[in-house]
Image (tube, rainbow, N blue to C red):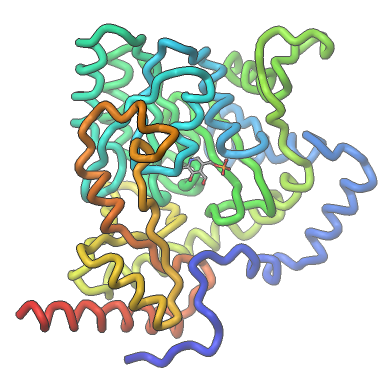
Length: 386
Ligand SMILES: Cc1ncc(COP(=O)(O)O)c(C=O)c1O
């Protein structure tokens, strides 16, 4: 058994990058904002729009207040409304389904692939056919969530959606920095939304988000809806419904600093993931990443039948871990009325998945300890079964 490291092992690490970038760089950026006074959607947010669009390889990026705002703004730009069906995975953070519901649309929950944990295109096809057969809802959009940072099967999802007259919104809230067949998150679907919540791969120190599109019309709508539906020419004429969805300028300044180390941090996330991939016992089923794709590894997640026992064992040994997500969205109180379909895979996943420490700053001592402790658990289980 490897020795327990003297420093605590982190599940997420929102702070160490400050030491690498230098706290004084953050403080100087904050001072600039204190002096210019553009505290909401100030010049740093516009600089960030440009940097993120260039990073993702999209024509436009519009920063906003959170990932939830980004998803909602994208659906607003597509005029999602009551009577519309929006297809979404149930095995996700609640906000993926909350966005269509806030606009009065009907979420149609789709089951997951047992290996990738992402939306199962075969079940999406079944769900589309069911809604068509019932004939009550207008087929509007699919929200494809890249769970834990790993890209969905976009080729299949986009084809199914487009064949049925729908658009695809990529919920890249966990996957900024991931790559799908050569395309970076943000540039894969018809529109994309991301989050900069502190535990995300590219993160701020509070709430932040962004939308991505190649359409200047859509980008104008997103920018209008972000500020209460304001007209582009007359700021006192609101020409559509919108929201307070602006980005706080201080958060933009944080993300601009964090972008300096983002590629290195992604490389370090891959380093951690590849040690887990290669060295964790086959007793654990590891989340499968599609061929020619790269996860951003917001989380590293495995599944096994005795998940609760493993979680207790790791915690007893000082290893933080978390069950994301213990309840699929369709089983949660506020969403139960839309639980109209059988979703056995995501219900099973919610009982078997476990996310283990994943930060760019785990060193070999930390990883030796996590891997040895997990393999020790697996060996005891396998010996018992033999
Ligand atoms: C998949 C997914 N979608 C949407 C969101 C919402 O992002 P935010 O918390 O920035 O509103 C999150 C955040 O955790 C998420 O993980």
